[in-house]
Length: 82
Image (cartoon, rainbow, N blue to C red; front, side):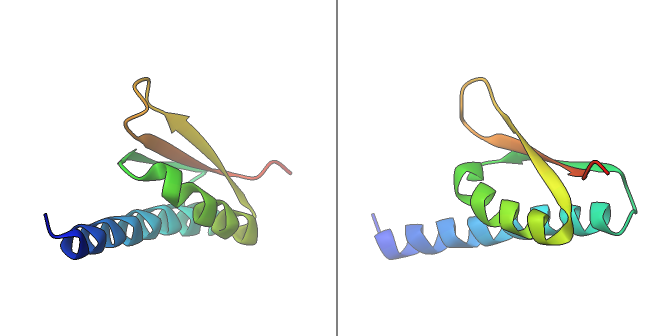
């Protein structure tokens, strides 16, 4: 197995999943939607920390919704309570 290829694929997936969550954060922060859920993240445990930093900077909050079998996570972005 080519670990360089595998590492690159994982990095691309993490980057893509962070971009999806960042887009959701932007939508909520701009008031386009009060809540957005990004579902089916495969590497949520890796994505969650940087996503929480982005959310804090934007003044919104994240709610991770872990799958029952812990195979992934959905992340809901919500407007922060006033």
